[in-house]
Image (cartoon, rainbow, N blue to C red; front, side, top):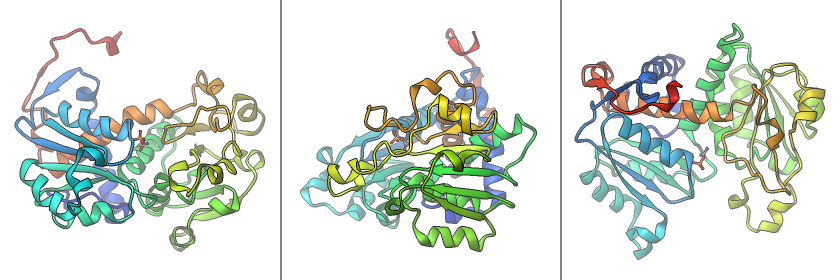
Length: 337
Ligand code: CP
């Protein structure tokens, strides 16, 4: 794929070579993400960060990634602070905002909405999550995390064994990650969910057609015994018609240290796209795992910065100039101590 000027809307756009190139560029971003160097390569560029659903990680890490490359961020958060509430179409909003921005990131509750917006945009658009459809940059940072975690064990992504747990029907991060795994060989996937929240059949079919060994389970403990990664997810309450309907499934699959110790292979890596639901009736990933060195959830969020910096550098075609426009850090860097 040619990254320059491209919209990043779906994992379907990516070939394996694109993912590998992206990961190489992400590695190059580490000195800047860790504040060992400062680059101003995107000085003068503006990111339009448009979030029409709640977000902490995706919104702030897109913004921080752009700032760390020297660009500026203009943010719209929530329908009520945009002219969409006055009846303006997404396409008109795109026509306007692409005059103000060099790249736009967007999250929206409707599947397909970010692609609709992108069709009228004069600048590249990145999908920060469109309803229950896709969250491509999350999947890329998840796979980058998997690659880094397995590299420490002398392994690559090929041959991966992964259990995906929770609301697989509505979880867009799982949808995108499942599609991304189709680019790799000898992958075993265990899908653990209530039957009503199973991964959409078209995605399961896509994985099987790509040669992945997919099994389905409604039971947690016995299904996490032989995997490299447990990828837990939250019940996506916002996608249910009522809270009561979501309550039927909340708390069904809880991983804690005792279950991990009893059922998982030693050093199984624990991931979650976050936010985890830490309320007592949910608690799919217990805080007693926080001191477990195999809990990778905050390495995932740190890696998100690298992946999003790399995507901006590629889409705005500055990969070869990042170091040229860099200088030393002048302030105290607590990360180095
Ligand atoms: N993983 C993720 O999309 O988190 P936010 O909802 O906080 O952006």
